[in-house]
Length: 504
Picture (cartoon, helix red, strand yellow):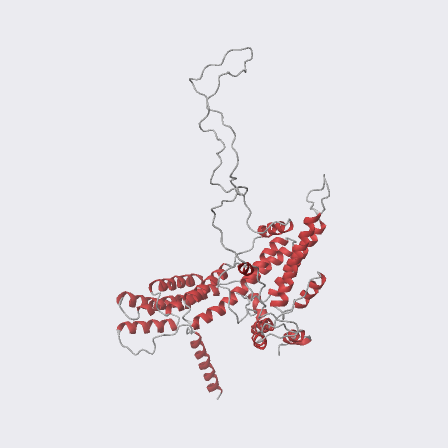
């Protein structure tokens, strides 16, 4: 009995090893086609070799099919399968070769449905090689570009477009986390313009980032740090002032502008991300800055609730594996919403410094340059005639600087005042007795008098309610302001005690 049990156990282990040696990624797309043609036989043979991880044999068989039967109906699938063999083999060199094969397939067969699949696999190749946010982001940036190409070039394939959007949100979560770490580093070094440029670009480019509220809060802290720096600078009051001093008026304007910018960052947390952790801190900072505290709309609360519910917190095993795992943790990426497909204009630190200085000095924002204006109607000076060789020599005298007494001829190009025009209008001239005049009577004079404006039909008088207000109220119910109870009831309850350690 014990021998039989041991034999069954050994057989089960062998079956498991055999199953593990097969490639589950390789699936024959033409397995249901019952054909005995030689090209179909070669294709099935290559797929069977790929399933058992014999990738070299599979590629040789596919190349035989492509070279022997160039007009075969399976030629497109054969070229795509060559790329699949490199993709399933794995490794940096094999993935690079697979990417080239997929690009060739898109070049030769751009109108086939499989072209979208090839583009998705090109993006997945970059996704698989993506590293953490604090390391090289080359593959993450290339993955973002490839997923965008998939969504914009093949919108007629909803299944692959949905998969591409989901992966694009995860890639943008990694890129946004990188920008956030750089902006936070500049903030800790008190390099506020550089931090503001990074964080503003982050919020505009990746609004679905899981730490968007933290980025906006640090952005507000950057502006408050600049306010503290401006207040610490010396004030110019006269001559021989210290270097770097600022006038009193410019100083007050800079503080006002920076305070408004900080309040705008805090207000965006409350109106766009009302259910995130920094919402209460933003209200406290607005109160400290003596700025109005806005209220979010019900639609904003519902949108932020859906975004937070779609995120997944990393478990204990995921956190432990992240220590040895090369790729990033994308569990906090949003699963709903549309990713950014077009990058906005990046914000420059030098541009921010110039704009803040122009606002403080009261200059209009925008481009500043020099222009030349031509003034018409001015008088020109008298131009002396050019000297001539046949002019008479000056008479010698005791004064060596004496000029000859010969009269000069009138210059034909000299400007002279024009004669008065007889046809010009002269308001002081006597009226012409032959001039025609309209007959104006009293009735027409009354008609020409200014008429009082008509009463406004749509004007709401005191004590009246406008017609159709119920329809407007029902249509704008989603834009109505949310109460504090709506915001607090929608927030996630934080885990306490042992629940932080034990997930169940």
